[in-house]
Every structure is written in structure tokens, then in C-alpha cells.
Length: 264
Image (cartoon, rainbow, N blue to C red; front, side, top):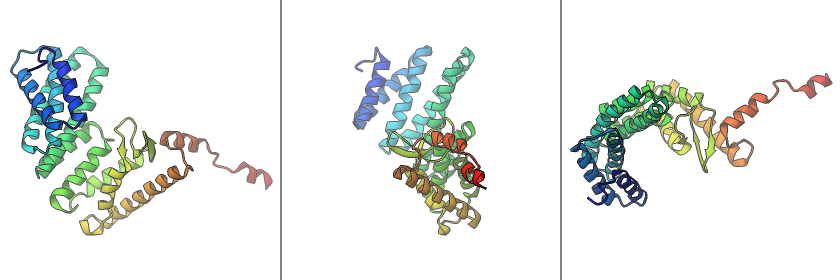
């Protein structure tokens, strides 16, 4: 295979093909490099590259809707990632470990989506739950978990606890903010999720025909209203688009109207 003597460059080329939507070519290259590395004697650097190429291979298979193959690639990725994480932990490199842990969480979310696309509710929920356990503030994992049930079952019966967890997470955020021209929400350093994506799931949680208890529906409706209100304020320029800055400004606003107080 061209460039096999420099696997890192092949990974970069695969990423370029994915960005250019040349998915079939990206799949072929990712499969060939993955197979080559899996069957080769590896050192730490090649183990690292194996994780990278398996991640791209899984992604492109998902994008091409090859669910069975994507599932198999995800399992190989999880195994390779486990080996790499063990080595990083033993090295004492906390920064590298934290970075790779975040990537592992995204791997679990992607695997959950793959399982959902295969119609396997239990398996998809297992992956999403694993991601949430590692990052309780991961909004995308939480809405994907709810969305998987909705997609496969056609309703949200049994999703009460998942919906409540999502609402609690959204309440912990600083609210809606605009990043790179996109409106979304996040909690702490967890991934930013667009409000379109969040509202898509919240709309389901607000739908009384989908089987959630009235108490959860009412809380979902309040959260949906709050998000729409914050979007409107940002769009009108009445609120900072940076939610954290807006929260900081709000915290500086006096709780007492001193002009009114001094006039009494």
C-alpha cells in the first residue's frame, strides 16, 4: 500500500478523504492500514497509530451506513484503546491520559449510535451509559441514549430516568451560548451540543403521546421554553452570546436597586 512506510501520513490522508466526502477511498485505505498494523509487530508509536486509524475506519463505516462492519471495527478500536490507555496510565502522563479518555468517551458514543442504527437498544444504551459514567455532563451521550429508545421503540416509555438526568444536566449548564456561529449548550469542559439537537430530543420529551409521565413532560416543557427564551435574547442582542460571560455579568448585578432604595 502506498505510504505504508509512514502510517501517520496515511492516517492524515484518510482524514482528508473523509473531509472531502471521498468515503469509499477513505474506507479502503483505513481497512488496509488497520489490517496491516493488526498483523504487524508494534511498538508504542504504532499502537498509537493503530488507535487513530481504527477510529477513522469506524467513523467512515458509520458514515457509509455499514453497521455490522462498523460494530466490528468499534470492538477492535475498544481493545486497542484499552491497551494504549493502560500504557499511558503506567507512564504517569496525566495530560495524555485525560485527552485519550475524552476520545474514548466519543468512541463509546459513536458505538452507541452504531448499535442504535442496528436496532439493538440494549447494546446502544450500554455504550451510552458507559460514556455518561465517564462524563456525567456529556449532553450528547444523554440525548443519544433517549433518542435511541425513541428511534427503535417509537416511544419514550421507560425513559423517565434518562429524561430526568438530561434535564438535570441542562440545568447545570450556564445556558445557551453561541460558539463559531452555532447556538448550543455545554456543561463545564464537556462537549458543546447544538440547541437544534437538544430541542429535537426535548420535543419528544414534551410529547404526551410518547409515554413519559406528566411530571417529566412539564419539566421538559419548562426547559424547552427556557432554551427558546435564551436563544431569542441572544439573537436580539439583549444577552451575551458567551453564556459563561453572561452568567458572570449576572452575578455582578446588585440584588438591590440602590437608586430606589436611596429615594425612600
